[in-house]
Image 1: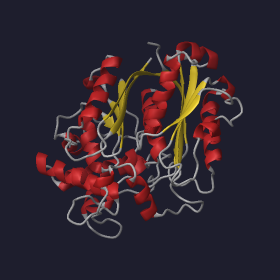
Image 2 (image 1 turned 45 degrees about the horizontal axis):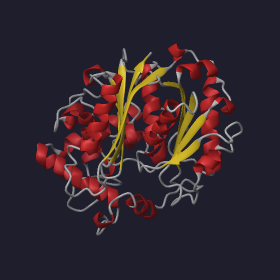
Image 3 (image 1 turned 45 degrees about the vertical axis):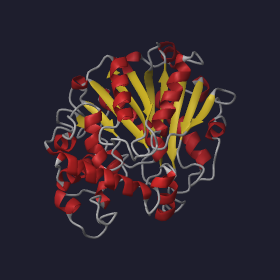
Amino acid sequence: MKKIYIAAFHQSKFGKLMGMTVPQIMCSAVQGACGEIGATASALDVASAGAACNFTLNEQGLLAGLLAMVPGLESKPIETVENACASGGQAVLSVIQKLQLGLGDTGIAVGYEKMRDAEGKMDGKLIGKVLGYFSYPDEREGKVFVFPHIFAEVMQAYMAEHNVPESDLAQIAVNEYANAKYNPYAQMNKVLITLEQAMRIEGINRYVVDGLPLKTYDCSQITDGYAALILATEHGLAKLGVKKSDCVEIAGWGQATDPLKKEGRDVLRPRGALRAMHSAYEMARVKPAEVNVAEVHDCFSVMGALGAEVIGKAETGKGAQYWVDGKARPDGECGINTSGGLIAKGHPIGATGVAMIGWSAWQLLGKAPAELQVKNPRAAATFNIGGPLCATVCTVLRTV
């Protein structure tokens, strides 16, 4: 097995890309990542693009062909992947697999989503309908906003089974908004909320589904954005002129997919996610106790709690308490979602999994903003999941 390194990471500010077209986004992502290390796209051997709503919201397919329009990438092995909210992570795995197969020594994974129009406005009902396509057909019936409804049910089940108060899950969002304040790439870096605000039903904060506990502040953002990672083998680093000491190794990875239908599964103990994370740890020969940086898929606050459990930092049912106790803070036991997470950093679906890995690499290299930088970072874990706790991509990163 070849060692795989992150040679460069680049992302847009998350929020609104305004009039940028999809071809412009693809080109900017590649050129931005190459610019981080002074490389040209011609130095990249393979590529992969990840997105979820490119057909339905942008009327654009064959993203691989758009990448091939970037001078230097034409006629190379490139593909497009889709795995709902895990599309970005899947794009990274796609590049890793190409490098392992010997199709090249360098590659780029690009993830993007454009969910707003050229004026930065969004059509909430359309987006809710489009995202609902990533659920089992029978489980959409009677749900206006399918995924908030599904995760409101997950939140209710988590609270009931583990005797967790609503305020403990709200604290996750409060912590993440506090982190996003210092992340210049975060969508919500000009907003701070208190626990009282997160709990009060007032103004924009409301219960999304009558009779269920999910509130507006428990939800991730509707976001435009892109992110790109340049990956390389040791030979590829030499080709790029990048020192190994300036890189982070993707030491382990795992991917697993559970049945799309939520009914009949124990979503509070997601088998696929736990298996993928275990595989990543085993490959990296890293134990959860060694990890002190993590980015987990908090599409809703309950997933911040479950994420802490999936990566092995909290026992089953104790994930929310991990946040409440301050252990997930940048100065805590393990800095989780120091970027602000999906709730406050933003959630441009296809870019999310790529950005999770990139931010974790910045943490390990000491490049995070000072207020968010974890002291003495050792190893990082990422947990990217798509659908109703269905398709999972996990990675473990470590310094070289």
